[in-house]
Length: 241
Image 1 (cartoon, rainbow, N blue to C red):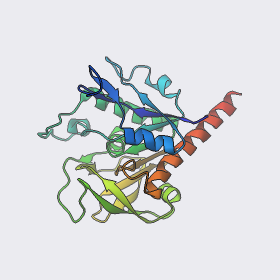
Image 2: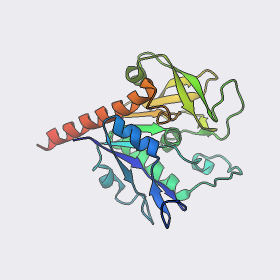
Image 3: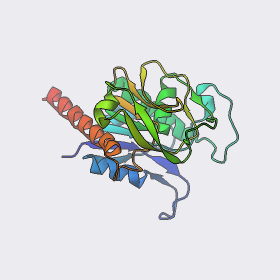
């Protein structure tokens, strides 16, 4: 049986295929999780308090994927709000931050992608660069190289010290939260991946789902998540037996 991977859903007020609003997950994310050996399931953030019963709800999954999305409200990490075409969604921020805290506290196998890695950092006490200055690396919409630390968990997964990644973001980690270790950077120094020192959590700033069908290193991230989730389920079942 495939391990169940909870993909934290995104609330959307408009969906062409539905009459009303919806809770969605990117198809590319779901396809990448499936191809990696997992069963993707969307985690809905209910009306009202989205964190109610969150701990017990997450226990039903074998692993979690914190996906990309709109900017986290800068006020969540002590920065001034900035004008934007996509205002922060308080309900989504609250849910994502709470999920990040639960997976670290419980050791749930997790892959955090783009916004997901930023959420992880803020949830644990870190901060973000609100708007990246221009550099020799185009982070906003390009494929660029990332340098991976030898001996890191990420290196074990991708098997290389320099890999191409699909980048689509204008924010990045600034002060790295306690417990997180930087394991990859772009050539301009921007943090591109982190791992938690004790929890089973890996975060990447790029979008591995974009190239997962053609890039072995991106596909490996989803295979790794499924394998970690499968091991987590077997360990949990063994402890309950």
